[in-house]
Length: 199
Length: 199
DNA sequence: GTCGTTAAAATTGTTGACAATAGACAATCG
DNA sequence: CGATTGTCTATTGTCAACAATTTTAACGAC
Image 1: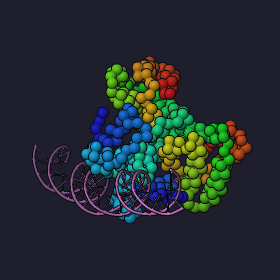
Image 2: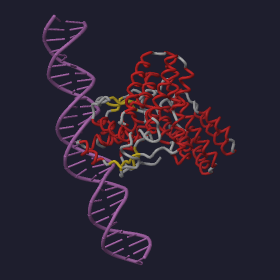
Image 3: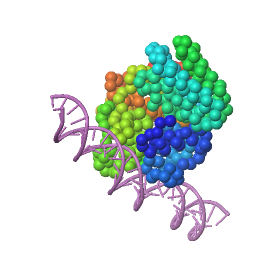
């Protein structure tokens, strides 16, 4: 986990992790002053961070009132999100198969082993981080990473309900299956495994 | 065009319009201090607005350096964006056909007549605004508008190259065609017209 | 002339104080 | 008793000053 130079990013990362791992539940209001004293800094960077997270879809803002943690997406919205994620990540995988740059495979392998350990451990925040990192690695590879900013808010909205009914080891196996297909050069199999993984 | 209560939104709307209509070209740096004196306010709300637009994909931010207007998306990215927009807007149209709420048709008809006038006029900013409003109306209808925040940044990135090689009247006719199919209750035709319109 | 070093300027990052607004609660009027 | 108005408090919105950082340009050594 790299640490950002400016406070705004540090605060955003910290809150993002706590929201995604379920430590802060949907509907919880976040007050600027509270967070300012909690982090020991002024309200300025806090404001920036909250604005970030709002645009990422993790928070819901009402002018002159404040922000609260966004609710999980509706079934309809989630259905659309699933299709969007599949579209983006499948495009990235397809782009990778045009070059088959081994650097990505190396990074994915590293991620997999870390992910496996994390799934065994108790730090859900770490699990979320690594799961997301896996998919980010794939997306980053395509077109000089130009898809990342498109992909991130979609991904984050989906991870709002990460903690619920999810078998971590199952998730790991699916990741491993995708990477296996990529190693073997079987594009169709990789795309199919990816599609089935994003649900 | 509704005017926002807080300065931050006013600034964001103003800059958004100027960027989309091509008055501020890609690569142009935007300095907080300059904008502050230009708008006659302090840097605070300017910062917030720039953060907004950055997250919407219209600006590109580098820490400790500042923001500049984002470049048009690459061919690859644009290709993905087209698919995403089609997915979202098609979902919205499909959802509408389940209810066929006439309120939307009324609003679309109103928009069409305004749009037609604007295409004849010289205010490109107005044209962009109405074009976007048309698609927003469709998206807003579905699932209590829950798709809007997902749709907006995708839409905006696509409109970064709005001014170029585009026949306004052709665009109007395509809008009209979609609405006509909706009036007639022909779902397949509406979806097909929408798909062909988003390119 | 070219490269590296350093000082200056421009710009963003951060802060604390003050203003404006929304929501809750009590007092007032019909 | 219900609705309305006014006040109070918590919270966000805005501001101007200061700190930290990056870029620019000047300067000198080789």
